[in-house]
Length: 92
Picture 1 (cartoon, rainbow, N blue to C red):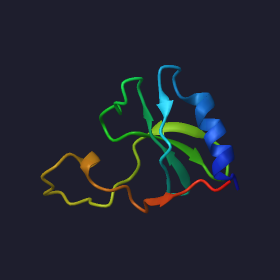
Picture 2: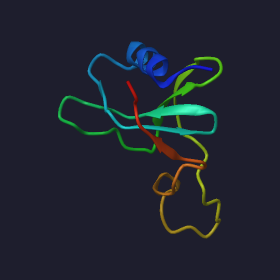
Picture 3: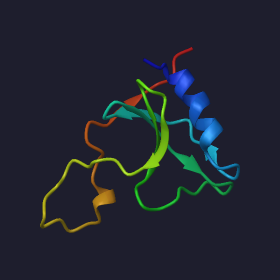
């Protein structure tokens, strides 16, 4: 299983050059979750995030499953929390 430090190295190699990785980390659905922003501090819309699989180290830019699957929802699905989301801290 990958550590958070190893996952950060992997995702930094895969994000576009014009993006910066935020120092806010989480995990859900067997993956580490990362948010990248542009040079003006803006996050791309749409609810996608960078993920690194804890077991395989596979890095993707993907839309993860959300908590609410209610068919009568009022808001776009990206407004609902990611299923199993847990904020984590980087320890030295």
